[in-house]
Length: 257
Length: 68
Image 1 (cartoon, rainbow over the protein chains, first blue to last red):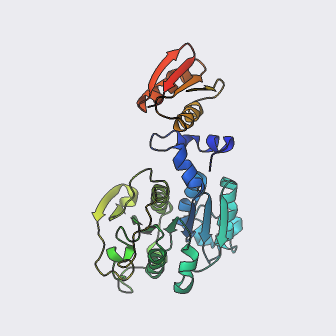
Image 2: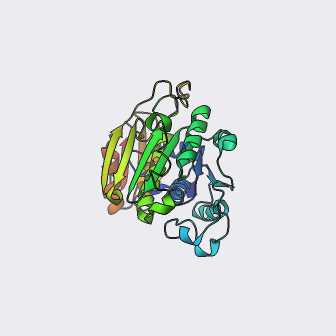
Image 3: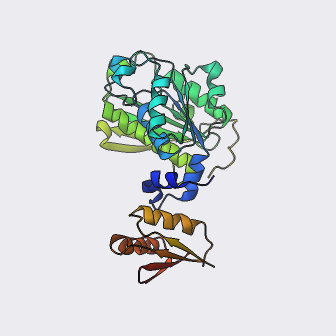
């Protein structure tokens, strides 16, 4: 899939990178990504994937835009309140890059629809804010062998990990059980600062670009722990769990780039 | 084999990007002749090409790059 003149100019700053190439850009153009959750993480993640030229981006969120979202979810504007987040996000994303096919899915990801949503995607970026949904997304991506970028933010801390099902630790390998109810405050109780989520969501987009193009080594078998609002960072090693109910029996995906 | 690109009037870094994409489509040892504006383009494009490991010589305002 070759690049036209408009695309060469639009993507010229990333094409100028020594690590990037026309081939990487073409690979991105023929790729599809799914961003699940269009809030504080999903706003920057979807924005950068669309801006960078991923060919197709599906944006998934069942909720309407609320006033309290606007302090940290820059894809949604004040006039969008009460509109669906999927539609609100898709409208802005299409303005950012009309070359990209943006598909809004106003759906809640649950066990019975998760595999259908991630099926056929080249990468999934999980920007949801519940442990329950993360396991559902992880399990669906493992079953469908779709590479996944997990992310989370709480207070001034956050985490990101990349997963190649069948090859590297999945979310369940790293976190076999959800923390007991009540031990971790739900996001809305704990508070989130926009730019901190912006750091985490941006790193998730960067990881997705790595998984799609192979331009750099993704954070597989490692968890990036972010503290002090993005200033302090630690890499924590993790590895596949023997007998992991999600990924132990998943064969490695055919090697992408 | 040799190919040519006229990148006069094309600013940095777009001129380097066009050069890089052309080189990507060539085979090792093939020659690309790039016509550039004097000033920043002529100073910058040869440097980028050398940094990427290509053999470069400058003839007036033409940069001759042998793909690595």
